[in-house]
Length: 159
Length: 182
Image (cartoon, rainbow over all chains, first blue to last red; front, side):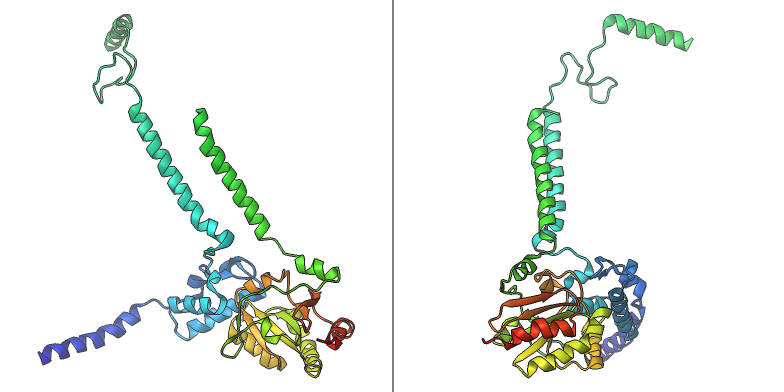
């Protein structure tokens, strides 16, 4: 049992640094497109103001300290507030950005359900043969004279 | 389109128009304070939430300074005119402190390290609070940097200056407020 525990401990000791080494190093281009320049109200990667430069310097400093992307984003929120990640606020007008897509999705779903029910209730044309998949299914019945003319035309076509 | 299908479309359109109107009316600049002060009134400052102290533990609100004349200075170290203004703001604080007043800096949208570097560089001795995302100053109708507000001893806004202060403004506008009785 002791041997097994020692073996597991040894495996963990080897695996943990290896896993850490596999985590990609944070980079400025990877982070700045997910962060807002608070004053410019544009993504940081397209912002050129002094305030954006200061935010970039802050991120670069944390990258140099070996922080991960998640740690850097947490530090940004701590220093600048949650708005720095560019997500709409969960209050006031920002709430609309969260609610509107849900309302639109619900409205679309309701439209699909109502339309489907309406199509199912649509009456079959009188005299139509109920032969699902057959050509002309659901169409008005063909006149016998027209049928004869159609056969003649098709026969002439085959010659 | 069948007539009974009109009402959901009309409702959706009305909702969208309402949303747009709400957005336009709630995101514009509020000039209420400027208008009131221009008429000679002394409005109460926005209540605002408590802000963290820069370089210290804890939070503070404007109410903590009631009874003192306070020059609220909105600034950031990434704003060049703000940094240019800081030596005069510090000098003004020293003058105010001798008469029972203080400057209260509101550092906006910057990280603590950058703000503290500026404080040390200029040698600011007055308290500073951090408005990390600009929510606090937005309630004051902020339109740029720097901005200055004088709060009288009764906690009311007595003067608004939406650009850097000058010695002339300090002498002619701030000093008389400082001389007022509580």
